[in-house]
Image (cartoon, rainbow, N blue to C red; front, top):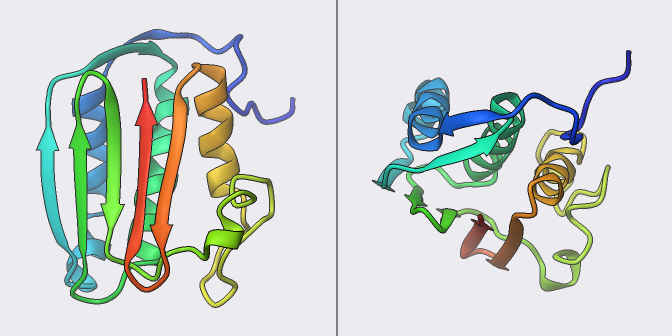
Length: 150
């Protein structure tokens, strides 16, 4: 059976998004600590009727990128409200001419770091499935902000 990528037949339940996000942040805690990244959290309670596995993939890809493309002693700010999730990093950023294509499968804005270029494609697929809006703002050498509007 082919791997599901956020298709509408996945089982949906009411998911405590704050709890799930905190679990995923905890999963990455060791890597965040090793790179001396400062984490700033502003998380309000949010519940969404979604597939938990799809949301886990979305969170993991955004968090992984915020860590991977950050700089040592950088920062990540995560804000969760009933209207949106925002993950902002102080990393290397994305060139303006690459912003339009980075959610395409196998597209990577930076080849110096590992990865296959499918993470943001997965994020986009999950957003499309649930009619979330993905907004990306980035400046080279300043960082990136990924906002998911519910």
